[in-house]
Length: 274
Ligand code: ADP
Image (cartoon, rainbow, N blue to C red; front, top):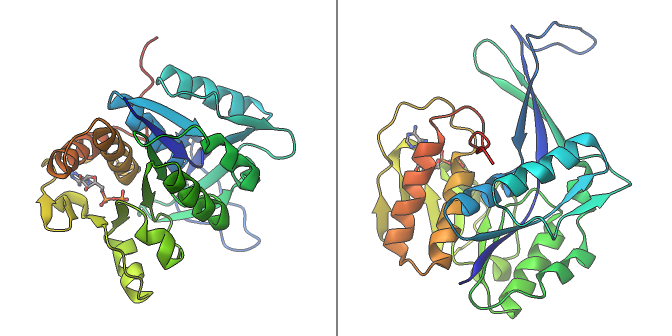
């Protein structure tokens, strides 16, 4: 059976709850810091593993305790970490999220090791086959993502792109992806950029998702935290397609998993007991 290969980012997320955001030059006090595991690539690799297919994460961490802990965490989720690299010259990717009392966020991302992914890492995709699905969000250098899409395509793998955070990629790269996944906001940006995508899948939050003529409703739930819903969707969709599910079945499975993912805090589910 094929595997899902996620070529992507990973980050340690530091959440700081505060009454209000600081102004330039000002110091404010925060509530207790909360450490969470994020990065779209890692979230998607975890979702694919949970959906029961082989899931390989191709990515980098720094030579620091955060990086080592994250690799171990992915391993416990059943993600194949053999294609991960610990780099000496950059720290593990980190995002600092300032949450104010009204729920507004300010986010600072230090990509660190994620931005040490380069053209040399395309060699890690050389064993892809026609049964595999290559899944990529856009938190890595864009020229590397575009080149990886071509490499996956040359190997006969199905290539899936998640245009998040939104960025413009060459039309020929978008055209070889099946599908390109966006949320409603990214769909608007794509339309504004005038980019045509033959196989566009749009997730619609609590309304579900649409892929061409197919639509699927979301499971009605009371969300606790919608962070990472799109990542759970993408990882599960890739797993279902890899297993040979047709589009309608894959869409339904992805929507169900994404709705379940909004019922816990954080982008990833709690760690399973080993
Ligand atoms: P993103 O997280 O990328 O912004 P969406 O908000 O569109 O993406 O959510 C992705 C998927 O997660 C949806 O297609 C849906 O299946 C599920 N989902 C998101 N929000 C909710 C919600 N409030 N209730 C139920 N399901 C949801």
